[in-house]
Length: 94
Ligand SMILES: [Zn+2]
Image: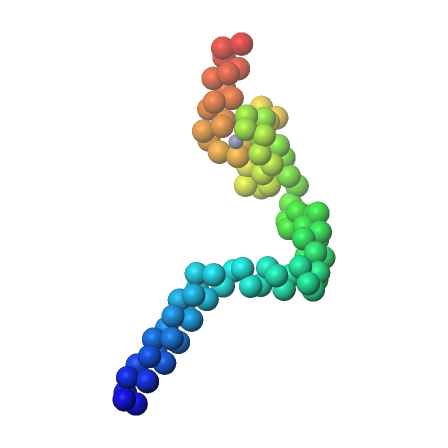
């Protein structure tokens, strides 16, 4: 009998672990609403994390990319060679 009880207990623990893995996200959310602490974190990312790097806008896709890692061509900065090629093709058409 004791073995069966231990097995049931182990299954219960397993069940709880699986349940926490599946539904574990719901519980902390309720805590967040109660504590209201993470709101400060939500407001902090006003400034980009890499404020030192100058951001330039890709005229093709509108994405802001750090100037250092962008591809410059004719005064424009592109996030990828694909955007550069696409922009060149557009310029040729018009
Ligand atoms: Zn782009």
